[in-house]
Amino acid sequence: MGNSEELKPRGKPQFFRDYCEGIATAADGFRFLCRYPSLWQYGVWPVLINIAVAFASLLITFYVGTTAWKSFTPELPVAWWAPIIEWIGLIAILALAISVGLISCLLLQSVFCAWAFSKLAYRVELFLGASADDLVDIAISAQIIDAIRACLKLLLINVALLFLNFIPVAGSIAALAIGYYMNALILGSEFLGYPQELRGVRWVRRHEFAKTWLPSTLGLGTIVAGLMLIPIVGALFQTTALVGAVLLHRRISGLPDSPPCSASSDGKLIL
Image (tube, rainbow, N blue to C red):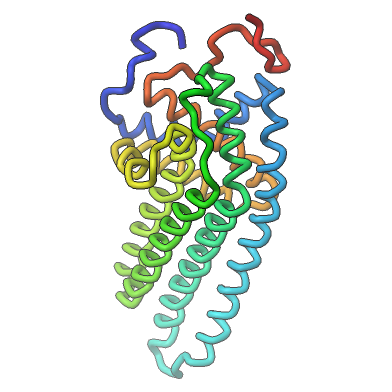
């Protein structure tokens, strides 16, 4: 980005453009790291930790789903309307298992990946011209507290949505739609929050920013949620999605998303 007009903060969201931009964050981050490969060294730990977290989350999802289903099926009545109840129960159990998996993944990421994600975001910000004086070190305790808030919010919302599944058809559709919206919003705001945390912005203000730029947040949250369900490959692209979230935040804020001077193919700046 080179001209002054492009460096101005965005005026207001445009749903289709911003949603697609949010969806593309993982690809954008991957291209950026391939263009400046020296930054990959800061992405190794997030990828490795994410692989372990992803497998743990999938095991939790599978365990919750199978345990709930085994407990539910013996209680089905022998009646003509039993298949309807079985269908509603299946949707509710799938929603519960996926929600528990996402919450577990988010919490485990925050405990084990937060430091590595923050360091990667910090290095990308410096590479793009941010001053070290403008960035702050984030206390792990503050990250964990913020993560627990997000996880509790996800848990309460998804537990409440389970009761909607007792309304045939319409309730299940509404639960899926609302569940998608809330999960994407919270996950998107968490990833979009890393570059804001580096600037000392706390949880409430980060969520206000996420709601202001809702299409971007939903797009980012959608791709992050999808990647959480894919082992290994998903862990790699969650890391590149973080880099993409840094680039996205800078574009929204009117900051350049490319280095302030030329860079060689290995990512080292040429002054």
